[in-house]
Length: 419
Ligand SMILES: [Zn+2]
Image (cartoon, rainbow, N blue to C red; front, side):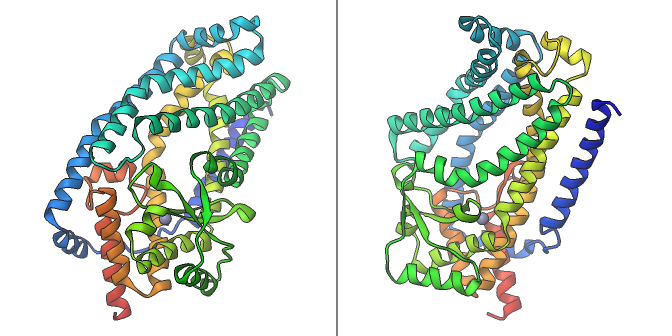
């Protein structure tokens, strides 16, 4: 069999593996939150709070969709015309067009150009956040964060670009196989190292101070059978008023993180409710699920790019001879951008199912639906979330169930548990 035949076979295997993983690992069978409870919950929220949140979300929308469209247009313009290939050549020229310069500098130049062209939309977003009082760090803090995130992307991007184009040179017929394995490996590696290498670039993390709340949280984790060494507090307040918590990392780098804003805004019982949700993620190995599906998706993308990239008309559009050369990087970016757009609703759907399971875990672990509901109300109030967002936006991009869905889930739980 030819390398191409093997690639088709591998692609089929990866699609199947991804399907099986999402069927087995994603909690599909959970009943939806009753709509009647959602409507009732919405009716009980202060009218002016809902109106204010909706106004805020509408103000964000032009920037968000502008960035989406501009990003896509730039990717298509660079990838489906010879412009991108020329940009890569240009970036390599000071180094005599050496392939490493084209691979790394050319690749970074393409990404940087796309970033710069979508920068006005990012600034728009920041101005809206400031106007509505959610952002606290001002334009200089915003700019520093932006530069930091460019730097982090440049380091990770340079490693990935150099690795990828080394492989395409060393194994011109089988690069897709090594590339797929490498991409999957990179996803797993990043899951391990992001919390210890990247997150500290943006925030300071300190162990939660000793006291009744920490004792209560550690006792709850022990009761839940989730080994948690510590609950970390992130200094999010230097950037935002928004409240949040999350779990990240794998094995030795796993951590539960709460924003300092959450500790400031919420009651201890509400913080407990939030941490119970995060323990649900830890207990159900949701970071592993995300890492595994991410790794399979990355491998699948490399093989699909190889197969698509041997299609003549596409190569002619981009003005390149082979998809495996650095000059074809903009074409890869264009294909990935389109694929990302298509995959977004599926990713959001999976994320919502996983989040709903963590909510159910929190309700069962705390046995306190009233506090859970109060916390959802507070989250929506502080973060200016639309409690019942437009359906299309929800399906397209919502990573979490809506506020009214989460409140309704608490009410359904309360009925069943007789509380
Ligand atoms: Zn969650």
